[in-house]
Image (tube, rainbow, N blue to C red; front, side):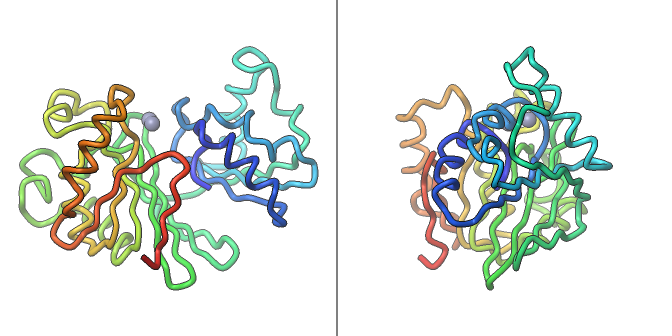
Amino acid sequence: MFDLGTGARLLGRALLGRPERGVNVFISHFHIDHLFGFPFFSPVFAPSFTLRVSSPAFSGDTTRDRLGRYLNGVLHPLRMPDLPAPIVYGAVRPGVPNEVGSATVTALGLNHPGGSCGYVVSGGGRKVAYLTDSGPLSRPGEGLSGGGPPTAREAEAIRLLRGADLVAMDTMFSEREYMEKMSWGHGYPEYAALLCRAAEVRTLALFHHSPDSHDDALDRLAEKWSVGFDGVRVIVAKEGADVDLEG
Ligand SMILES: [Zn+2]
Ligand SMILES: [Zn+2]
């Protein structure tokens, strides 16, 4: 599971209905839109359920302390020690693989104020990546953004993403909006498509939509990209959607 946004509420309910009694959560970064769902994630109230929560940090203590700034009795009535489920806190380092059951999860450093990590999951002959929040990994006119060979950061991303079945990537802005808000650390569809084509990704899911993007705008975005991009299938991420990796 990646991040603890508002989607964690319904996912938590679904997980409680399954036989497994544990979940691994990887946090991209600690901006509040990625944490809101933490105290609404039902498994944290199930003593039989074990959570392992990891983030890009120097230690598991750092992960716990950062989450604890949210569950401090002020921003939410609960405090961390009130949660009945056992929670193990971990730390990840970009580029260092983590074994999770039969899968491998590797963090990739992204381009965002304060830092953020994406995650690439490999297992069972499949590869899926979650890349948010991030601006392009090259500046306008450089690397893939400039139509040239990849920068070093892009080359590392391409190495990890190579042949992925699905990549969900931050495309909050249009290219024009990105040019106006380059320091915000969010991307745009044309760049995501270039990166995915370079890594021979099968399906790109446009993700982390702008709060200003109402449903009609997202429908238009899906229509515009329905033809894909040079062999990459492009879809628009939607709450509750299932993606069949065999399809
Ligand atoms: Zn952020
Ligand atoms: Zn965000």
